[in-house]
Image 1 (cartoon, rainbow, N blue to C red):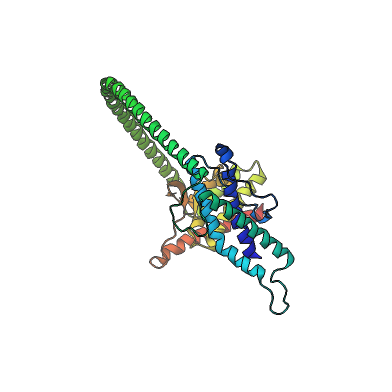
Image 2: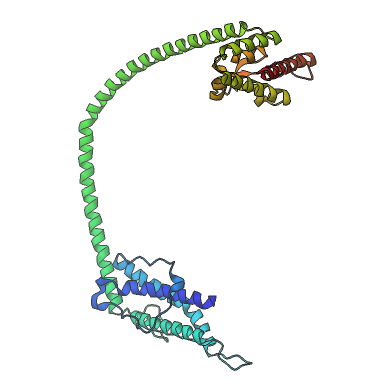
Length: 354
């Protein structure tokens, strides 16, 4: 019965708050009485709930007590409904509305509610007929209020003392800062002069590095241009570089076949889907390409002979086969594609002979 379980859990929350107050050692003999041992609830459905934190101050104790009273009051409509239903009978069978086990649970629930209600009313000095909100607290409430006021007075005094100490500390800090200010200013001026000198030296070094990098790139570009220009383009160039590749790998037939098959795979992909740019781009530092092809004389040169150019992909040096525009230059596109197919044919022929 979900409604009953919910009410039980709600009342268990009140019990936990009450017990956190009652078990507080600061109350001594003013602690509220323990609940009767015979009035308990099955808390199996409450196992995942966390226990309330114990009050840390007398003000917290007062607030917890008020919260306990309010939470119990929130349960009153539920208790009245269960009290009414407990007395009801089925109009057909004339039997009690609740079964035996449920009756027992409801009775325990109502008994626990009444016990808590009586205790809290006695603590706050409230009877069922009293309506004045300014009821006189009993000794426990008075004690808690007095202790809470004392805590506040002590806290205020501590705060005033802490503020005075902070003023003294700030005064000492200000004096120290004043004494250090001139020294810091001198150090700052010296550091500024040193920094300016260092910045000038850094700029000079950076400019030298930039110039050296420009010269290095220019030299690399020139070497690349010389290398590309040294390779014969077209079918004859492919044949020449294929012969060089076969010669450079002649000592290891397996290596030779891997190189030819890897080249063949590149040109087969391009010829199968010439419109796919990813098949026409190979990073020059690609580990697999260099392992199978690039490290052998004639390997990467076949790409250049077959129309690949040197370029960059996202700043990475690469071999790129640029597809001419088919609509604007059909002849150029045909020449480009025919050379790719011819290269593929030469590689297929070579594989047949191996």
